[in-house]
Length: 401
Figure: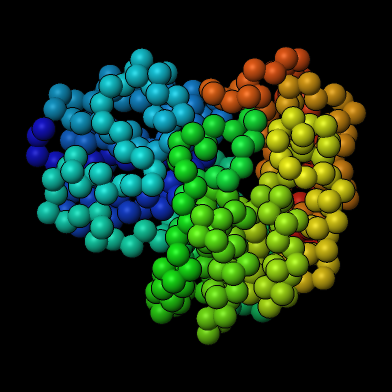
């Protein structure tokens, strides 16, 4: 391999927090080794493509990007693929790429692949910035919007709208608490990428949180695909960990990236005192559907009424600032009436922000084998119905708080 003087980083289209944190480390790592970041991949000595594979459309985008960059790169340039895609759809990736890959959970592999003086382990993996979201116009817009409000919060009456609470921020100090997933959702392939669920110890999480507080950060983002299941491998639970974190001295709040509603229901009695402290600013609880039949097919392990009761109790009886959610439309066999049941997530449940997705088959999932697939045109139509309902609620939340 030629001497590395120039590097090109390509972020995935819809980066998760862990993905963005890794890319942020790589930017600082290259900078410390006096490697110039370039915008033109054709002049780079090394190209790194960050991937996810959460959805088929995202996978399509990343496969085409890898193929194109492989053809455009100059002789001697090494192309490396980072992230979940190599484990989610290795067979498809190998049709366009046979080079080195690095998993999301272990970017120290770069130190072996690229023998540079400074190592990735020298850099805190706790930050995200606008650079990591530049390839996603929607998230990039919300990121900039939140940054605008944060910049002028010193002015009277100016504050970040609650609808933006779970949007990533440069003012976050991110602490990775777990890797993997305890669930077995029929539509999701991310679990295949991360393997067995593994929690970080409470002591390490508290230590890393203190590091952020000592640096002056006021918002701690606790990250992981399934934080609701935190501690299941350590014989403890999420409430035990949160109790220790929110007990730390200082003026700060916690943003929890994902809590499966199943765990909210199961841990509600233990979590409510933590939520009542006012230290938990926001979290995402992905509902996915408002139809009990579809939820069962998804293997989501709760009913709409149980979800509604729990979310509304948290928002009406505690000091949690906002809870966001995800909705999937067009799941195999979903009827129009069941779509209307999902609209109850907007009209009857106190969620403050919504992300909506069209169902897509993912390799190795049970849902991909189900009959009665919904056409792309129908999924687009249904997504539009839900999107408009959510947009109206977002507008109300923006005006009335």
